[in-house]
Length: 137
Image (cartoon, rainbow, N blue to C red; front, side, top):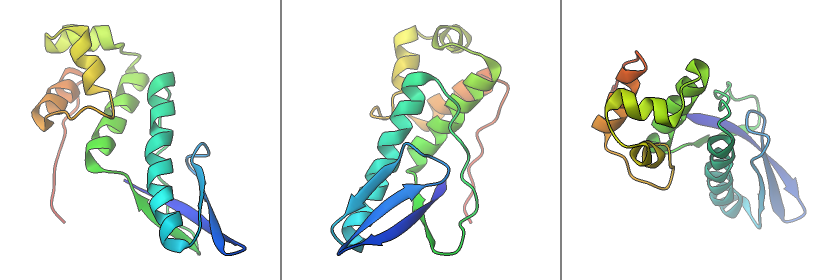
């Protein structure tokens, strides 16, 4: 997932905002610093959605002057899982029952700081009636 970010020159530094993720706001001393901070702000903002069990907006197309900031693939997969759980009104406990694990395991699956095996994510999606597809472009 690539989210468009607006970098606005402010003195010697830059302010960075995301149209799709309004919680992600940051700045940097120069463009490179602002780029680094934008990646961190986007990732940090994802935590808010997970904590609140809110659907994460899908990224829109970049407009003129915007830069695309990549969300790590492992986080993107978890975002898609969260969105599907919210859409189907499935709790962590219910998902745990469906994939036959303890609820604590689902808490780890939906924790952005925890490394989750791709097979585990695929099982979680399957339990929601979805397939996790990978491709190389």
